Amino acid sequence: MRIPKTTLEQWRVLQAIVKYGGYAQAAEALHRSQSSVSYAVARLQEQVEVELLTIEGRKARLTDNGEALLAAAIDLLDDAQRLEQLAQSLGQGREAEVRLVVDVAFPTALLLQALTQFTQLAGHTRVQLTEVVLSGADEALLNQSADIVIGTRVPEGYLSNLLLDVEFVAVAHPSHPLHSLKRELTVDDLKRHMQIVTRDSGTLQPRNEGWLGSPQRWTVTSVETSMAMVEAGLGFAWLPRHMIQKRLEEGSLWPLPLNEGRVRRASLYLTFGCPGQAGPATRQLAETIEMTVASHA
Image 1 (cartoon, rainbow, N blue to C red):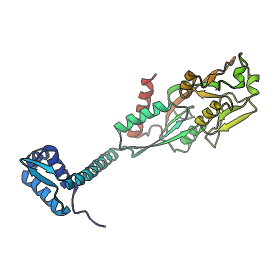
Image 2: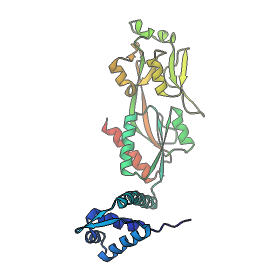
Image 3: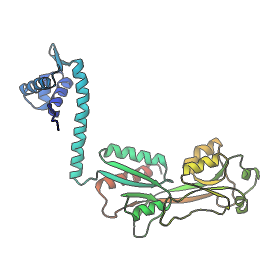
């Protein structure tokens, strides 16, 4: 293995000289003698065999080659700093990765906001995100494949925190035959038309929720596909209001005027995968999600 001739410390000295405008200023900022700063840069130029600095009056300026090399070196210095921060975090018991499992009914905008805030707080911690439907959340807990689970149930043996309620609205395209009836709709009306259903992503004990009374039923694997099919006029479905609100306002989807069951609600809960053993990064992400949800309540 080839060992580099230069060190990160030498590049850090060069960066300081440029940043503070000269050798004396860099020495003061780095709490070093001016002679050691001069020696570090002179040795660096010898090792790379390229002139890095020129002196104009009392100010040091990078050469063109120096600018190119220092720009690359700054990336290395940043990487080294992140590596040290990661080592410090791991030494303090912080996890290198948090496994987050989220039911697709959880609002994407809230999830993205929470993850953005978490990145700013703990950018050195990776997040492994998995999206599931219904019992897929339960399986993640059963298989111990998640540190945090956001799902629609509180599994036996777990304590969970309620995050929010998601409203599902029965909708169809404006040109759908159900809307042409121009009256309140009954269960018998629904049974005569195609229903679009999102399949449970779990495999051990899959479950169904909501009304599934139509003998004509297409089952899909994502809410996005269900929404696209409804928009195309292929059937009706109960869809999360937060996902279709804009379409409702624009009129590309219309609520079905059911005599009952126009809207149903599902509660979403946050559950730790290992109760009582969640690490600091896991707890921080959970707190960030809860605070994000609370701020939009």
